[in-house]
Image (cartoon, rainbow, N blue to C red):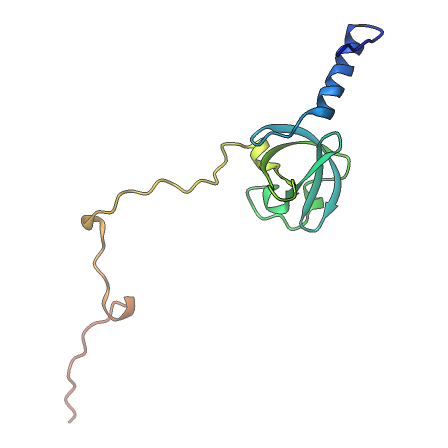
Length: 139
């Protein structure tokens, strides 16, 4: 393949455009994508020319997001990580938060191995600290 341009910079830019058109999306790769549409459940982001995927609302932040438009707007260029390609329909699943914060606090903390000495004694009567009943004498 031969690509011509007025200068080296133009030819290099044209080569990058051609590569982007023929490139296949790769799971795990971070792309600079453009937000094309915003829906209630997420945003559609174009990661390569003619190839767009869904960034679900749950993949926008580590905390709950009420509205997608609180985080993104149409035309915004954002980094997104391709996390899955649907085998049947070829749909792309994207994550914004994994692209900007790959080592986020989403992992559960490591648990200590169970040890009987760590176990606290169970409280009687459903967890209440009641004193035993005493017999009353009626006079």
